[in-house]
Amino acid sequence: ITSSFAVGIIAAFPYAFWEIWRFISPGLYIKERKIARGAVFYVSLLFLIGVLFGYLILTPLSVNFLANYQIDPSILNEFDIVSYVSTVTTLVLACGLLFQLPMVVYFLTKAGLLTPDIMRSYRKHGIVVIFLLGAMLTPPDPFSQILIAIPLIGLYQFSITVSSRTFKKISRDLD
Image 1 (cartoon, rainbow, N blue to C red):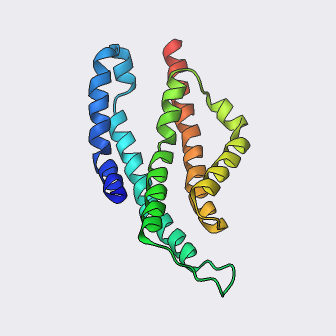
Image 2: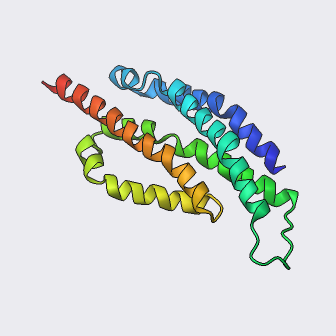
């Protein structure tokens, strides 16, 4: 049931987000709709990239680590299908959601709650938070933690660029 639920969320996410957008967009002003143009495409694209990263790269390494991890040779490492599916589901859906960082930054910048200067000044804090998220979402090996942290740091850097371009456009429109 868990795997069916996860596959259903992944398969339905673009359509469900599009339906949510169709519900919200009539209540927005024309300028607000113009600002959010392409949101459904980019949110769906980032989600699917995150899901693919989680499933094709992170999951095999994490499962391999968990299968070969032993504290003592006398203790057998037995895991069942429930724990396997739970691990895969958690990693895949978490990566899909974490890859939404550029879109969140875009909308927070458009709302005036975030600037590229704030993101640059708190970059070190962001990297620490990224490694903490990596530690919470992956098995207890540093390789998986670093493997999830590297693309998230790249997404953070990309988000600074997104915020900078958005902020410049807002400043230009105000002048």
